[in-house]
Amino acid sequence: MSLTERKPELEAPIFEKSGVGRVGYHPSAAADACEPRLDASLLRDDLDGFPELSEPEVLRHYTRLSSLNFSAVTNFYPLGSCTMKYNPIVNDRMASLPGFCGIHPYAPTETVQGALELIRDLEHWLAEISGLGAVSLQPAAGAQGELTGIKIIRRWHLAQGNARSKILIPESAHGTNPASAALSGYDAVVIPTDERGLMSADSVKALLDDEVAALMVTNPSTLGLFEVEIAEIAKAVHDAGALVYMDGANMNALMGKAKPGDMGADILQFNLHKTFSTPHGGGGPGAGPVAVRRDLEKYLPGPRIAEKASAAEKQGLLYWDADRPDSVGKVRSFYGNFGILVRAYTYMLACGGDGLTEITEKAVLAANYIRAGLVGRYHLPYDTASLHEVVFTDKVQNAHGIKTLDIAKRLLDYGFHAPTIYFPLVVAGAIMIEPTESESVETLDAFIDAMLRIADEAENDPQRLHDAPETTPLARLDETRAARHPVLTWKRASEDIDDERDSQSAQPEKGA
Ligand SMILES: *Cc1c(COP(=O)(O)O)cnc(C)c1O
Image (cartoon, rainbow, N blue to C red):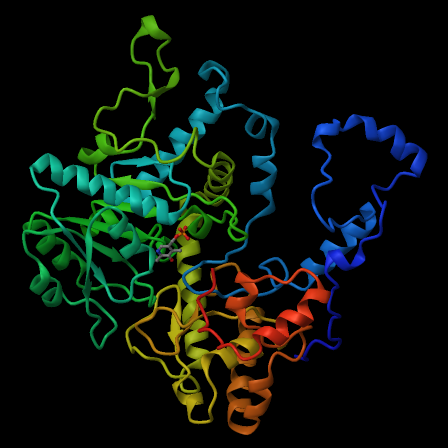
């Protein structure tokens, strides 16, 4: 493999390219003819220095910018915990069918029976995969699914007479877990991770008391490890009168193989944008359906899909049942992120049950292939068997002054998006790799090869890693400042950089 040959040019900010009076692509006569179409009230003249460009200039500017980016469409993107699997194009085609993308949420239900059927079937399939009784597709992200689940837990405890005050969460958990607990008024209590990287039944039992409302567990954990004591742990939690919430962001390691309901989970969220191949990133819409034990269904967000039962009322007709007095309420408007639901439905239908099981097998195989290719050259903090992702550290490379961030930056030169770094927090200098099932063995080999070369470079040429990346227009940005104080013109940029030169650089953060 060779490094990218030509270093791309820096693209000038759009404000630098502006020329007064440049608009559209029509010759000016035609442009005049077009202009009356815009109501004068919509034209703004109060923005100082608003860029004026022709349509091709705008198109080229943004296309060039997009080509400077790494994406799952252009590069291997092994971002651990995020499951950046391939998003099949057919998903988008189906979501673009006029019968799906053209319907209005207020359309009479008789006219949108197909959309309601899709929702009903998708709920049913997810319930089957989770081993739980009922599903709501409303939540718009994994984190919102968690929040919905914790609200349900609170309702259930209140119905028993006491909401309780604590939620137990393992040290390795995703940050959204304690956030969901805190937002619902609970204190997050940390369960330590043992030398296997796991949660032991003894450590959970030691923390259980009658103030614990739930255990919030990710299985497999964010270390990619299966919590082998989960059945014993779930039993102890239930015996203490608490519930088991399972974070299902890693269902791509279980789907078709094991059901959370069978492990004792009472509530679980799915991340359709992870396990079921719908897009993420750019703050775009996701979906975090929440599944619950049958007796908790009454607490699910409403309204819910139901079927008219009596012949007098058009038997079999699907409708929205809003008469749900125990529900935690609406968490998202209308049908949830319906376009995402269509994509996930398409994926599940295209794969079939056996296909989904095979996906799990291949995701686990790919992670273990990478593990086997790197072990010995990179430090593996836990010896426990990996499922769909594997966490290494920079401990070996530290001896040469090389850190995880240097390794991640150098990977860009080899044409790979970096894995998730410095997460989970429980592992110092973590490098968390999740290849997913959709990559060829050649791509996995090329990635392993790049990681091994970087390990060589750490020993023989550490300065090169400190200077990496070499092939991007800019090398090391202060990422926090770049996000919080975007500089949109070069004229301002030089002044700002002078001002800010001495300020501290911030800690690197986990990828989204
Ligand atoms: C991604 C992730 C979440 C949060 O899901 P979002 O859809 O990003 O809100 C929660 N827990 C785990 C383990 C995750 O990997």
